[in-house]
Image 1: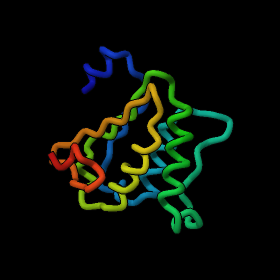
Image 2: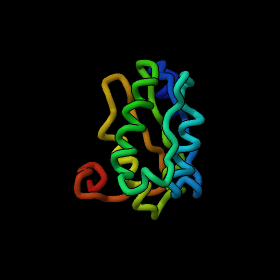
Image 3: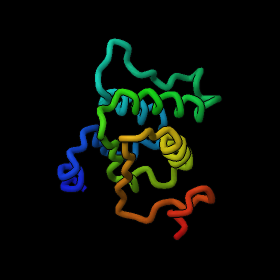
Length: 124
C-alpha cells in the first residue's frame, strides 16, 4: 500500500488502529491529532454528541476531508484490531459517505472486512 501511495503522490494521514479505537472518543481524539493543523481544531467527541454519533461522524469527516490536500488518502491500517466493534464499523461507513473527489479512504486489514447489506463489495 505504501508503494501505491508513493507512486500516486498521495499525501494525507496513515492512521494505525489499535484495540483502543473501538472506543469512538479515543479514535476521534487521535485522528484529530493526526489531522492537518488549523486555527480551529477539529471537534472532540464529547458526551453531548454521543446521542447523535452518526451526525458527529459525518460533520467530523466532512471537515477532515476538506482540510486534506488533493490528491490525498486517509489510510486506516490494522482495521482488524477494531474487529467486533459495530460502533467503529458504523463510524467508518459514515466517514465513507463523506469522501470528496480527490480523497481516498483506504482500510487495510489482515482479516476479512465485516459484511453489511449496504456494502456490496464486502459480501462478494
